[in-house]
Image (tube, rainbow, N blue to C red):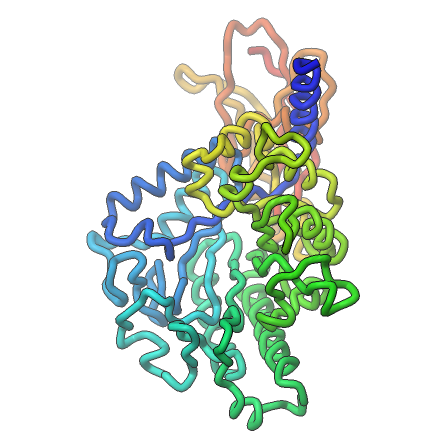
Amino acid sequence: MKKTILLILALLSITIAGAQKREMRGAWIQCVNGQFQGLGTARMQQTLTYQLDELKKDGVNVIIFQVRPECDALYESKLEPWSRFLTGTQGVAPSPYWDPLKWMITECHKRGMELHAWINPYRAKTKGTRQLSPKHIAVRKPMNCFAYDELFILNPGIPENRDYICEVAKDIVSRYDVDGIHMDDYFYPYPVKGLSIPDDELFQDNSNGIKDQRDWRRYNVNLFIEQFYKTVHETKPWVKVGISPFGIYRNKKNSPIGSNTNGTQNYDDLYADVLLWVNNGWLDYCVPQIYWEIGHKVADYETLIKWWNQYAGARPLIIGEDIERTVKNADPINPQSHQQRAKMTLHKQMNNVKGTVLWYAKAAVDNVGNYGSNLRDVYWKYPALQPEMPFIDGKAPKKVKKLKPMWIDDDYVLFWTAPKYKSWDDEAVKYVVYRFAPGETVNTDDPSKIFAITNQTFVTLPYKNGKEKWVYVVTALDRLQNESKAVKKKIKL
């Protein structure tokens, strides 16, 4: 009986894992935990190289890399100072000199991963920071910030701050080949008992006719989100805007459409009207941080994933997943196992869920609770393309031409010619190569048949003795990973 149950569970895992050809599989690499501080250039590059290699094996196809934790920079910037989370002292450039964002873009693209630059929009100082650079915005324009619980926050009620953050985003997007720009859940600060946000006078003088101060705060953030989205897409229309809000929108006791939860709320406590942004198309993907476990008394994971699936489907919905909490808690149905399987099952049952982002990358790399091994062996065993985003671009590029194998020295190589294009949304930037056995039906919807995803116009073939006829199929992908028609070739290997 036990063997039968295990077999059923194993088959279920394979079934769950096998069908997803399009899925965002992301991982957050953060710097605020100090993992890079003081490492130096060589060791940080070694650390990141190892993490990227392991994440690639796990099936990750998007890296969300923190580059602006407190109005500072892990990249070369004329607007903001170098981050202390890189060098140990804010404003001090790395030595030997390097640009972590530029380096990460190159390394991620080399591995077929997207790189999304992660910024914290309003936070100007974290609790641990004791010294700010003279170049820092809080030093140059102290009246633009307010202090709260040892933090400095760029005041969302000041229009100049919206313009400033958008200028920073435009600078990143225009100078770097990022695939996305991403912000997390730090809008107005998380409430602390006994502390109030010091913006009464600003509200009285600049209420814009809004009577309720809480509505005014939401209005300020809404104006920023809309402006931010337009700024990014006017700069480079293909760069995706992602937002990762706190996991609870509203509790049912505060709203008829709220979730059956009882925790901090985006709308009421952080003044972040996430559903408005989703439904107005002011973001390209939404990653609610559903970090709790199934069965949590205040914020049950199953309740929340079903709520977001029901209400936030107007844009691709990606689930922010806490690895450590997932493996620390037992599956309610199968107490001998942790909750990874149960959560992945829920993902597949939700029609609007288009992927997962892992909090955090190092936990997957360290294979806590065999989470990483399960990704690479079961759930993310086969490659995946990104979710479609027809609201940015839904037109596929033209198909490849002149598909032909030939010998190059000792390698048998399949070559093709890139299709012609007139604008960015027609350009082929990657290619998918599928491989089918003799007599096998050609089905490009099956991700298990993906032989390679490459930005090159060739791929090396596994030649043996030239006696078996295999079918290779090549398609072209544009920047939004719209896929062209297939071109196939029978090849003897």
